[in-house]
Figure 1 (cartoon, rainbow, N blue to C red):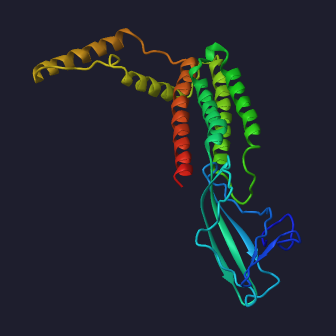
Figure 2: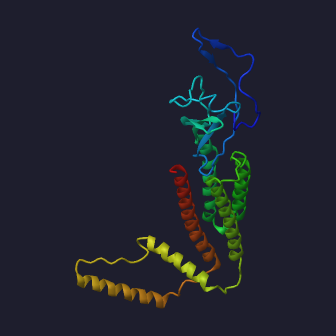
Figure 3: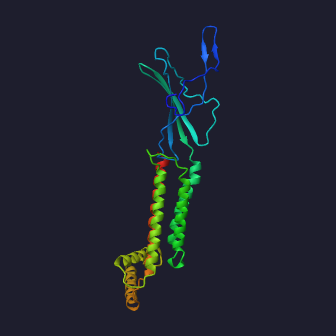
Amino acid sequence: MKNGFTKFHEMGGDFYYIYIGSGGYVLWKPYEVFETRCSIDITYFPYDKQKCDIVFIVWSYSVIEVSITKSSKGIDFYEFEENSVWTVLNTYSKVQSDKYESEIIFTIELQRKPKYYVLNMILPVMCLSLLAMLVFLIPVDAGEKMSYSITVFLSFAVFLSIISDGLPVNSESTAILSLYLIVQLGTGTFILVVSAVQLRLHHRKNSNMSQIFIKLVKFERFLKCKSRPGCRGKISASNKDEEQRDVTMVKEAIEEDKKEEPAPQIEWCDVTSAIDFFSFIIIGVANISITCYLFNTIISH
């Protein structure tokens, strides 16, 4: 066996029987358990497909003395038992010869069964990423915002250390799933930093506020008001005259409200609420987009 790595010796032994026919036909069926090595590509783990070659070479005889022929059926699956991790997709063989020696190559195409990894690796990671985003739904006044984010981050870090043992080790190719785990870890770190900054802003006493925070709060109020039907007065009329009259009445009412009631003050609690609002939307959309893109790439490769 050319690409075996445990031992290197000739095939056969003195305990094999050789059948000799009356016409001089000799039949020899040696058997042995071989171990070989395969170079694997884990880029699309756990939906990866691998191709392994088992090479046998005629080393002691030339191509004139020994001629290798192959069957058109590939590899015989006599007494084959289905594996719980891999599925055999296809097998085939080919013979290669040069002027000195000849060899036969048996190729096995394998596909990994992803069910175990999906249930025990991918789904828990997705659930933890969802729990990490829920920190932006907790009010800063509750007092549990920072402790919740730290707990989720530590849970995610501990889980990553556990599933790292289940990932195949390979420095030549990097699994997309490993990159996804790194992205989720970075997202958890970002959420933790944002939560710390929110607590710092929430307990500020001075009233000096940057225009960035003021515009952020105004934009949040604009989006929330736009999503509510009764937040802004909608005008409907049966003809143009009634529509114009209603518009004029609404404008006059708005002007009176501006004169009578002062503009609402923006406080630091409003700033932290706006940060929660936009962070939840941005991180949620980014997380869903990255998850769908990566796993669509893995499954449809």
